[in-house]
Image (cartoon, rainbow, N blue to C red):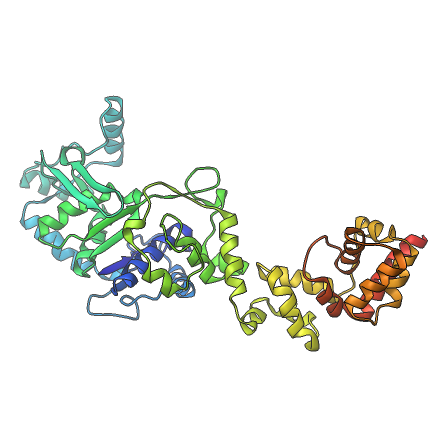
Amino acid sequence: MKTRFAPSPTGYIHMGNARTALFSYLAAQAQGGDFVLRIEDTDAERSREEYVDALREDLLWLGLPWQEGPDADKGNGPYWQSQRDAIYAQYYQKLQEMGMVYPCFCTPVELELMRKMQAQAGLPPRYDGRHANLTPEQVAERKAEGQPFTLRFRVPKGEEVVFDDMVKGKQRFKTDDIGDFIIARGDGSPAFFFCNAIDDALMGITHVLRGEDHLTNTPRQILMLKALGLNVPNYGHMNLILGTDGAPLSKRNGSRNIRQMQAEGFRPDAVLNYMARLGHYYENPAYMSPTELGAAFKIENCGSAPARFDEAQLHYWQKEAVMRMDDAAWWDWIGEEARQMVPVDKQALFIETIRPNTVFPQDALTWATILFTPLTLSAEAEEVVAATGDAFLTAVETSVDLSYSDMVEAVKLASGAKGKGLFMPLRLLMSGRHDGPEMAKMWQLIGREGILARLGQVMSVKAG
């Protein structure tokens, strides 16, 4: 098996096309095959080298190395479409010699009018073939006049294109509904339909997984490949990812690019575990390594129903991934600012205490700030702690050098507080929050001076 990911470098890779890359990678891994990276940069105006660099970096960050492609030429390169013009020219020539293509001199205005008239008549939009039968003399005359033209593939009439979609099952398309389509633009650059199919065949791609928005491209590509006598890959079209509002996933409803997710502190294995289940079913619902995800991936387990983006599920897998990091990796992940706040002698205890309470590096920074810098309690926290009474506060103060358990017993004995009335004020005194890490460990991390400073704040407010 050989799969591929063939993005256009017109922006940073986002979750939708990252999932396409992931499924293609996992499908190849499951069968011991190769995953190919190809850069479809024929859109010269929008394609940028910085996006190519970012794309490669992001795929490697996700753990999706390509076995063939840039920096891994296996004799099928170049892997940038902008460098393959000579190859495409050979196949244009072959189609011309076969009488399978012709120049179309229609202007954009004519084509738009054609579509409007077809829509008014309730017909599907397709080219009506008005230039399909120009004589050689008419073609030569128009070219001599400098009229711009595109190159159209001549679709056979009265036939049906049938193929078994790996995700959606058997698909049928009538050629009369397709119409002759453009394979070379007016500037001579190859159209997507053409170069994408040619490259898949020449690079030996056996299985193509892509979004369902490409489904109507497939019969066109099958027609071309069969006309040229080239191998036709197996196609599978995945339903698009929907956002929280049921519309296609976009920036507006939850999507972000992989570069943004990396900057936010997402772990790559968290993103993989989430995306691998976004429209694909695994019998094992637990966290899996990239190798395990690949071994258990089955194209037939790709669902036909739309997948819905769920931020809570993404955060669940993030939490799972963070808990699997070793101490050194977690310490590096939380960032320099948080690390600088933690005293060297308390580093190990900080990691042990705070890691269960972190989903992102910002969480570790928040707790480092709470534990190791002067804490300003909220008015609510001050009120709750002050309401415990002098005996409670005095007992905490006189027990500041004791262990946490001994301090709790002393406070309980002196004030009579118990249950929530005992532990909630202590938690608010230490952290200003109603939830968080184990209080015994926080007591150790904050230390004598920190506890006394917090008590001083409460007592000054009470005295005032």
